[in-house]
Length: 231
Image (cartoon, rainbow, N blue to C red; front, side):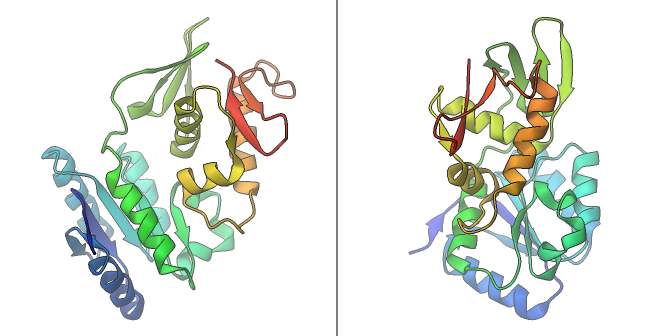
């Protein structure tokens, strides 16, 4: 049975076989419009139109022009989820810059891809436009920025850093395992390495902790298998 969604999928897939595979998989699983695009500018135009009309969440599935696409979305302050598929998602020289996207290098499991796509489509377009209070900090999700209340210092966050903090905040102090964070924030399969998460935690602590070596806000769980916020 296909799941009904209120979103739009924009495909920027050059490989015809991969495009057909993804399109057929989506059509059998989700009831959502799929628009095939050939240019990055075309994708951006469609995304802007959806935002202007508040017409559901948009998700981009792409195998080409990934870095220019992500750079353009960042420059235009668009938080649209991007799912990178195919060989481009496996480029070892671009993993750091691709960290914003959900990566599905071929071969990938269609079931997991579709599950992640459905989850992305259920996200609120702007995440939330309300500030989120986190102990000594106030997070502004729309702007991917966080303010230290003590002195008013504003700190820029990446989208993934923001999503990690939101996920941990939702748990109200409950530890969240590495696998749960990876699955919820990145949509990774469980057997992938966790170094990407560890890198983001390290960078968050560098930005937020008075002493990153002795964190008092972003805490490693006692058993060492997850993280929580001390708020």
